[in-house]
Amino acid sequence: MQAAAQRPLWHTYLLFLAPMVLSNFLQSMSGTVNSIYIGQMLGTQALAAVSGMFPVVFFFIALVIGLGAGAGVLIGQAWGAREPHMVKAIAGATLLLGVLIGLVAAVLGSVFARQALAGLGTPADVLDDAVAYAHVMMWILPSLLVFVLFTQLLRGVSDTLTPLLALVVSTCVGLALTPALIRGWFGLPQLGIQSAAYAGLAGNLAAMAWLAWRLISKGHPLAPDREFFAALRLDGVILGKVLRIGLPTGVQMIVLSLSELVILALVNQHGSQATAAYGAVTQIVNYVQFPALSIAITASILGAQAIGAGRLERMGPILRTGLLINVCLTGGLIVLGYLLSHWLLGLFLTEDSTRAMAEHLLHIMLWSLLVFGFQAIIGGIMRASGTVLVPVIIAIICVVGVQLPAAYWLDGQYGLQGVWMAFPVAYLSMLVLQTLYYKLVWRHQKIERLV
Image 1 (cartoon, helix red, strand yellow):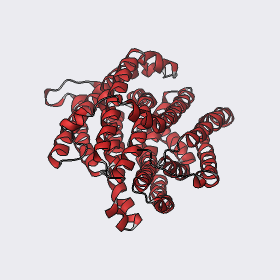
Image 2 (cartoon, one colour):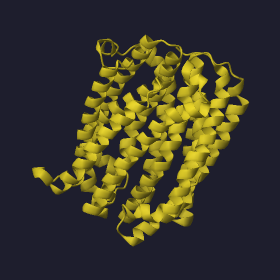
Image 3 (tube, rainbow, N blue to C red):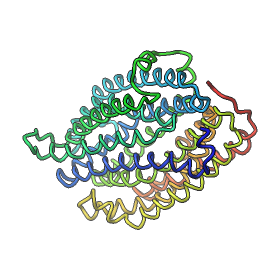
Image 4 (cartoon, helix red, strand yellow):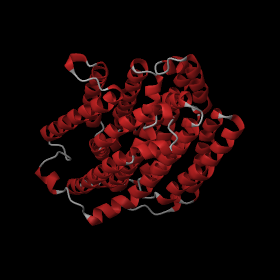
């Protein structure tokens, strides 16, 4: 933290942010290329079946993201205060809880996959394929959740390079195996729509093995050594603090995922062509939304480390720098998204009518991701101090009380495009309310260390 304080703040931001953004691009690219494989090699119907699983998987990942957010703040404060023993204790307790969540998700998700997908209104012509894909995805979910959680913990100690390198391993293995499993190359079985899920599992296991080797060889503070395994216990005091921050964040993520399920159900009513368009648009949106969230995470971790080091005067500059970077990075990606939308969507969708539909939907809401980034960064700064409840309530109100009613009403007025009009309405509401709370309340509160 001391070395970071000697650099210009924008430089510290970019050193932290660049590997994280590259990681997000790799994650998005992996999903994108898999969707291209499925759309081009198996057809639009198969892509529609896979697209229906996006919100379901995100529902479970949301719990772990919330858990990691809480642990990341505590680890950031402990790391800023130079207390490595506390870093291990927080990481161990959080990781064990994440494993238990993954196992529960695997059991419940696989047992109720058909009921869940049918309840979402998944088109009948793709339901069986969607269920087959869901069963595999649910059973590989524990390893995915552990990997996602561990990368969040690493970022708490300002290590964003190791998660990036691990993701390179995972992506290369997964992308090489997916087409091989679709076509049955090299004597492998032809697994059809399940190919991407099995390839993802192989890549994930390879990445975690490499991750363990690297951390041990580097003597990393979060290396899986004897001291780390000793910290793998459900410490009630630590988890109470983690959950105090992480649970509201997890609830927010779950509400967001539930809203996506409602949106998907609305989209599904327009047929499998609309579902395929939804999946393709989601791929493009991820490339913009994840970097915006990365800026917010960076602001939160840098803010937590500043609090741990007793450098509260840095909080304002950290926020302003994050907002400026959002304009440059997120804004630039939005411009590229508009300019290249026809070509990008053509990577997934082979039918001209479906691609035209998806392009129109993307153009309606893409600009609003800049607004989404602004409100996320403001929320991230407040999260660094442990203030999460009111910002989360604001987000939930804007989703449940603004976005969903607007989506239903606009769907009735304008059809499918009306569903997408509700996103900018919700994001603008979030930005206004988060800014008001930050300026009128949070800035006047006393900020203290949590660990």
